[in-house]
Image (spheres, rainbow, N blue to C red):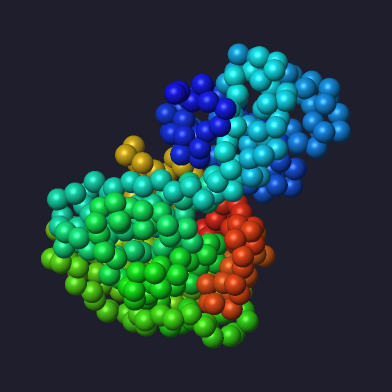
Length: 399
């Protein structure tokens, strides 16, 4: 059955439609504030019409008039709301009876927000390791599975929806041996502690990030300590821990050295920007530390290292194969924030970066509490905390 013959489509089907650049219109019927905070985007974002659901209830004629005034009858339509029910009703009661070809996004924005697309990093195909990048499409988060020794795997920055990680590893017969976070995340809830309990694999975090930076309370989660220079043998390859404070005090990157080198940068160097230093509430103190980390540690690594970041800001940052990656040498030429960092002094960097910060999402304080084990949200609250795209980079990334 083709998409056009269905009444509902999944988040995966919607993602494929946008990746292929198919022509359709999104009709988003959420409330104004929900739409303003977060909307569906992709490699080829379709035209989006926003008409709140309550208009259809209070004044059906006005709702129809707005629909027909903005969406031609020959246009294929995908309806969307928060959880999929209201938009399904709009599709069935208003659009389909009037001749529109329409499908509804099953599960709505909740389903869109928890969808992960997997891409194998092709450079790793003949390297004795296999690197899989998990793209959380709606939030701009990137997570990693690294296969080694045939049937073993490590996980870097595991997502809250760790079931997707288990699905991939179990399908391939891989046993998870280690679980690593690059830092205590502010924008999304880590699946590390839970995945550790289920698999028995140890969960690793730098101890500097085991204290909530605003509450100044110790984490209650179980974890193994990371320290700068620590190494892990992954078959013929080696994973090395690099302590890179700045985004957080316990921020680390992982340098994987096999036939070639891969750098899992977490929240430090992105494709078009760099990480912000203020999400712990100490931007003025952490900014000079961040400058030293960039100029004395990260930017001194070899130019051929393949950077695999923890986030993306826009979908067009991906390569043609769908992977978000670039060599450090490429990023020194194309990443404007990196280029600026290389050309200014420490004091100039601090002044510039503090003037380049986007809004501070208030829910990030609670997400850090969750990741420290200080707050245990239910599923609905966790979804609410993770609504919207990540805002972990400088403001330049979102322009």
